Structures are given as C-alpha cells and as structure tokens.
Length: 94
Image (cartoon, rainbow, N blue to C red):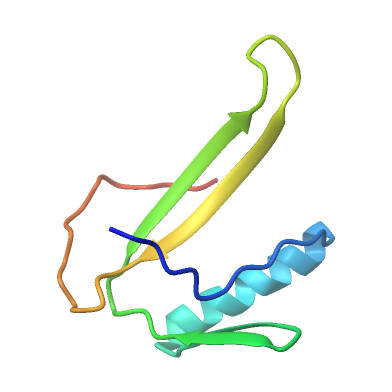
C-alpha cells in the first residue's frame, strides 16, 4: 500500500521543548481534541479515535561494530474507516 506523507518535520529542540510538545499531544488526547501539527506554512490536523493503536520503537542505526544513531519513535495509528486492529500487549513507560 503506498504511503502518502501528510506532514513531516525534523529539527533539534531541547529536551524541555520536546516534553512540552509531547505534553500538548497528551493533553489533546486526554481532552478528545484534534491534534494540529504546524511547521512554517505546512499544517495538518488529525482527529485520533478513542482507541488508536500506539506503537513505540527504539532502534540503533549504523554499523554493528561501532557507535551509531539511537532513536525512539512514538506513533499513533488508526484506520480511516474506523476498524480496530486489536491489542499487541500492555505497554509500560517508566
């Protein structure tokens, strides 16, 4: 299935700035509100359903015998038609 990128941005921020942005997403999820992403003139508004799929991935990219780049990705997914994909197990974040 082809992927249509609706919005993408990548830039460095302080940990506090990132926490603030993630907190805003969390607040909007708690309140049942849409999430609007804006960078420059690009903007997209998404309305996650009550039970989207939450994917968390931590990975290392680069050579196996040396330092690489570490990342953690948080992703909300849902079917535009409203179908439920089920439960992949209980996630805990400390």
